[in-house]
Length: 116
Length: 110
Image (cartoon, rainbow over all chains, first blue to last red; front, side, top):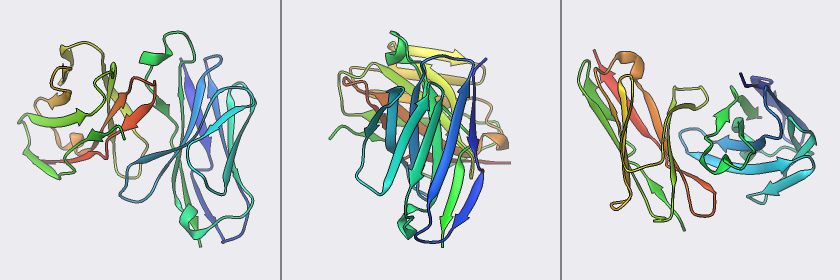
């Protein structure tokens, strides 16, 4: 069965510090990978998605970036965090096959980031 | 702008009753529909997927889809306090993009 690992679970970082969140998927090949952010009491905002190694699509302009160095690894980074970067960051995967149109997303446990 | 709309709630339902959660979407070409449950402080968890008009049942959960009315719903029978959560509706539109509703907060009263 497929599993998704995301770490760390919680993070407190000062403004201006760098960020690196990592996500890995097991039990599937060539998944579609996603980074979402959820502000407190708000809906899900898609930040980045990837359909393959080195292929990253950005949905919103911001000081965050994403990379996919391996098939099942997805990394979210920032060089300098802002207060507005606080939130609940979720990594997700879906099947990257011909039937992927109907494939749901499966989420990791999330990282709660507080920028102070 | 393609949209998925849900009543934010909270929707309060007595224990043992049927909870009915509703979702409407704007893109008539949408083909895939999903319901997720999100407990406070946790990540969303997939409950149901539905792709064809009609009803789909899984245990106490029934998803209903009406593409003509652009309406999808989730029924929870014999509601339990553990069903208290925010329920997110998600729709894959005609461009394969997943559009999320803002969620409905459900409270099951013992």
